Length: 373
Image 1 (tube, rainbow, N blue to C red):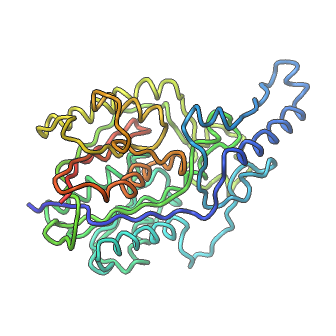
Image 2: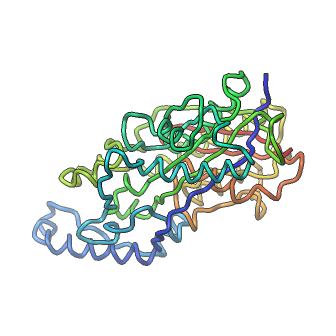
Image 3: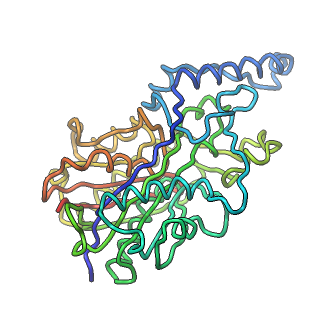
């Protein structure tokens, strides 16, 4: 059996930023237009008015101050309220492959590894641009990697589930160097016209290179243990697949065709599930909360992360023990915990232990215990 290790990470960040103030201005203009055009039905009680949003509400509800998006055009147009992507020819790279390759190349450079030495690519994301051919195989081709590749989807837990799959294959010897890439274009499955969720998501891509620890060329993180769990729930749902809204605007009024959630139930049910999952994982590995130097949690909501951190550690986390990137990136689905790890791991010392954990629709939760080497 071989010891798997994380030797490099990469982060693609889109060039476009939408601040809360910009988002609120567009949303409120849409709300005014909707309410005016449906005034008679609203007065008759046949239609609910669209309430106004504000930046203070967004920060209080989520901790989000801005988000990066791949395509800004359309989102801030009150008459459109969704991203607009021009069609790409068949011989052009897909959007997910394009941003995924960028993150992968950073991870490879970070580890000092050639793409040709990679023999496994897993594209793990909450939505995929198409059913087939697999985005992972396209990324493999664009990189010039060998071996094999496949897509997987476990919603916001996709990255940690992908890391477990890759680590298991490296332990078993069926792969030597694996890239787990998370191209998350979350803006394309968000309902930008819903006040309760119009602020939640942003776009990004992350990549994690995993290889045999014996092959690592420098400092790395040994993957000591991984654990995944799922429990079915309908409280977070998206019936639409991926980019259909940009391609088929006639479906825009089907509310169930975009991201939707029962936030109160999610908060109540997911938090104890995740806290117990991490606690049980640590206990089974002979670890205690005091052994942890850092928690890199899924970046969905600041209040959720604060609760989980306090529950796992048995106290309020000290600054730096549980880094948040929500204020800058918003919720980037499976990529969130990897962004936190990418930005806040270099300062750990040899022997320091931490947990990467993501959770979300499914319900799903995945945790990865790592030690700096």
